[in-house]
Amino acid sequence: MTMQVGKTSTADKLALDAPIFDPVAFRLDSEQTDIIALAREIGQSVFAGRAAAYDRDAVFPTENYLDLHRVGLLGITIPKKHGGLGAGYQTYALAAAEIGRYCGATALTWNMHVCSTLWSGPLADDLDMDDATRAEHERRRAIHYKRIIEDGAIYSQPFSEGGAAAAGGVAFGTKAKPVSGGWIINGKKIFASLSGHADYYGVLCTEIHEGEKASRRHTLYLAIPSRTEGVSVVGDWDPLGMRGTVSRTLLFKDVFVPEDAALMPRGVYFQAALRWPHMFLTLSPTYMGLAQAAYDFTLRYLRGEVPGMPPVKRRMYPTKQIAVAQMQIKLEQIKAIWFQAITEARANPSKEQVLRAYAAQYSVMEGANELATLAIRTCGGQAMLKSLPLERIYRDSRCGSLMLPWTAELCLDRIGREALYEPGESDD
Ligand SMILES: Cc1cc2nc3c(=O)[nH]c(=O)nc-3n(C[C@H](O)[C@H](O)[C@H](O)COP(=O)(O)OP(=O)(O)OC[C@H]3O[C@@H](n4cnc5c(N)ncnc54)[C@H](O)[C@@H]3O)c2cc1C
Image (cartoon, rainbow, N blue to C red; front, side):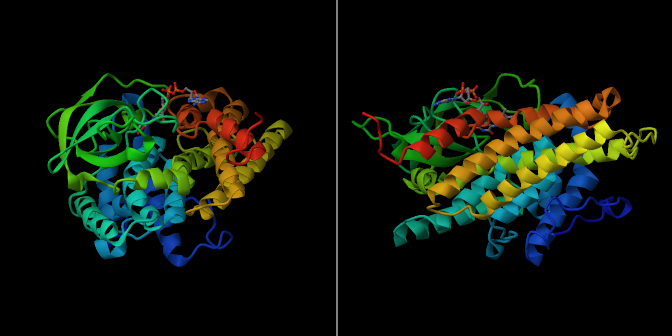
């Protein structure tokens, strides 16, 4: 297990930021504290300085991934016996928030990568499998772990297709036809972050069962090597925010993948989506970090402490003090509900816990951009120049509400419906 920022770090020269979640106040153990501190340190000392260029040119943060591998964070949720850091869901989420604080695109893409090991790891351990299936899954996931730990392999997670599948409504249109020794994949994924940069695309697709209608029950989660024949990346990527994610379109044309490509056994993704709903809350840590970043920037700016800016203080104006108070209240509200939701992530959560997870997702995704908006209004015109990070935080944070399957709109839909109706209830 590697776990240090290393010699190239400038952390010793910087005054490191305090953690978003103080380990004592939030009762984190020393192992969690160390992993989260590692993420914060590399985020602040290394990633923050590179973020503007990735954003400006809409290029993938390749150098950050080499660093994530070097310090061990590529394998954050891989069990220690396989060479990883052995972190669970909560630790991962807290570490990802610290990275999002300094580079949104790195945190968001890192989430896609980490989910391949989180979903096939601690999450799958909570789900039902017979002994033979579990043993086979254990053998297969060790193959993925080894690639990540030894080779620095990067995984992505394309599931959006532009239709209703990513929202969980219908079966994925990308199809996996069973053939001897594996599957033949055909389909298309849009907004596929890390396209052209990941070594493996963790694709969600529907296994074809002859004579049966396509069903979400038959969803497969397969790691397709990016350099396989029939895989192509098309289209451009020039979005408002999260520009370094390079979320272009992926095409699969008669792509063969062997059985060992399965990140989860048959039926397990479907089970996870029903029984482990917090699996869809993992896009939120990035935006928790952006919310904190908007607040951090505002305090520094009003105190006249932003590097590269004249040391003009603006903190003495009562309107600015009130705005900071509003930001602090909003930030604490977001932190409280989000920390509770990531702490109670588990199999078979109660109805109250699921509603809270939706509410946490909504609060973070909308709240991060509200904080960035308030930060711009409060700090003023000079603060939104592209030479400073605030305008990037504003644009990046605007993207959070759009992330399927738990977009802000869908969270509202689900909270309203699931609060008012028990499963199976109707007014007919
Ligand atoms: C920066 C960024 C990175 C991304 N990276 C990835 C990635 O790596 N992998 C990936 O799979 N996807 C990724 N996405 C895609 C994302 O999850 C969405 O799929 C994407 O924003 C496209 O949405 P759409 O416009 O096709 O949504 P549509 O399906 O057209 O929906 C538009 C809106 O309508 C609402 N809506 C959708 N379905 C329903 C419904 N059934 N009922 C009520 N309302 C509904 C939702 O609020 C949604 O925002 C990324 C998106 C962004 C912005």
